[in-house]
Length: 142
Ligand code: FES
Image (tube, rainbow, N blue to C red; front, side, top):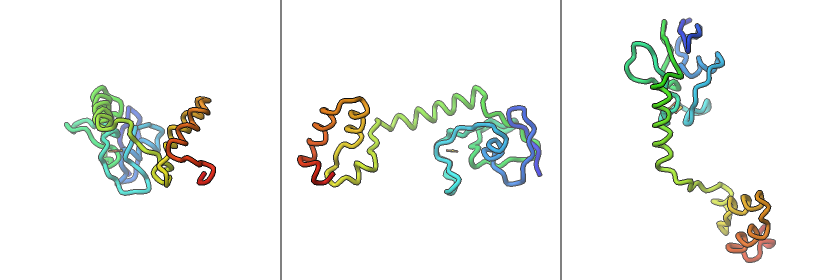
């Protein structure tokens, strides 16, 4: 077992445990975007960074392993600033142009997100008009 400190909390973990897992197991939240338990660690988003005393670079907690005596800070000013920059970089190449899977699979490429949004706003006529832009007889394939 290894002993370390995360945000001032003393923690014991098994060797080989990532900082992210150690934090999670002890109720300490670290934001993640690309991490998923079910797949191999990718380490690309940079949102899970943390600071460890004596280590000049920020560590990606989803891939960095705990070590004996490690002192980790998940909320320092430097960490928060780095996450903010990582998020801004991710968003800079994203214009809100995501296309819903239902639209990608619709044979007519109907704007599903659009008409569902209009329906949610109570704009039923506009929703129907949007559907009919692509599908002249919606009942026939709907
Ligand atoms: S969760 Fe994306 S780099 Fe760690």
